[in-house]
Image 1 (cartoon, helix red, strand yellow):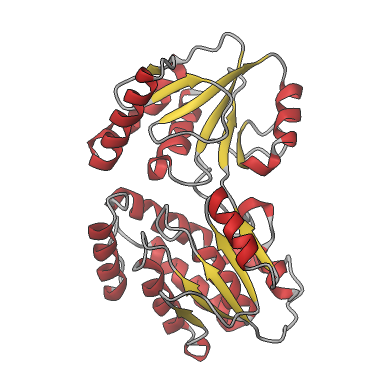
Image 2 (image 1 turned 60 degrees about the horizontal axis):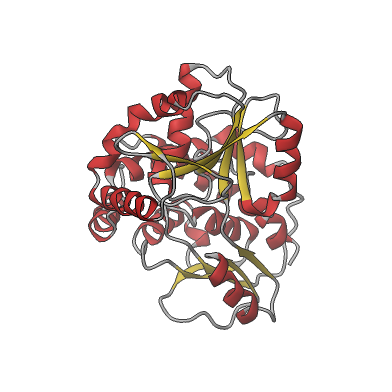
Length: 339
């Protein structure tokens, strides 16, 4: 177990030292280049942010804090099927790490949108702990011969997963998004950090803020001001295409919206939002927002806001999850250790 955590620490040190998309590992650099060529969303900025976020998450102190939360028994090794998403770079790494730490094996099916990054990163991780090599196997074929499964997809895909994997223990993840609750006294720096929460990875991540809760009378220019530092996002062709398309849909559907040339806001309660858009709704008291969030917990991945809000994360941290920030609130590591 110690060797596995030490290997993760070494991996984190390497990722933290990355300059943009260049690391000290040639094979990983080659995989990054392939990923950028294959997926227009995997820009140098997006991959660079992911590398830094993982380097920060895998710090020695944070690994130690995570490790202290569990009773590290040695479960009988089983084979875990992993069906990974590909919406943002390295999005399935946390599941891979959890399987690797638990002592199980994995059959990993990467998303067709991201077939290069994770295999290269696993090879690098195994180089820091050679005795653990070979427990994470990647495949493009349908999964078979597994004892449990962790699968991530859309709400429609999840229904298929629940049927197909009904005979084994499973963690099935569906669509969720981040929300932000503003009080009206946010600083300029906090509003710019909120802009990052909305636009990092072009808003494609399940933790990106898609719904804003604003106090009555709130000036929406504050939101656009926080977004302004990220205006160059419109220079990315795939984003620009989606912006144009969704703007046309709003116009043809007679949906009222405000926009600043690269992002649109519409007044609605919607837990997800098309690319280049977010929804907002006004509130009279925070208690009503808290109640609404509790009633719709299955749609919310994280809440961004002031520390005074229950379970709220600081502005700017939506796409910087800690190792113990489990997707959909399901403790993946406990699930694996208890198999």
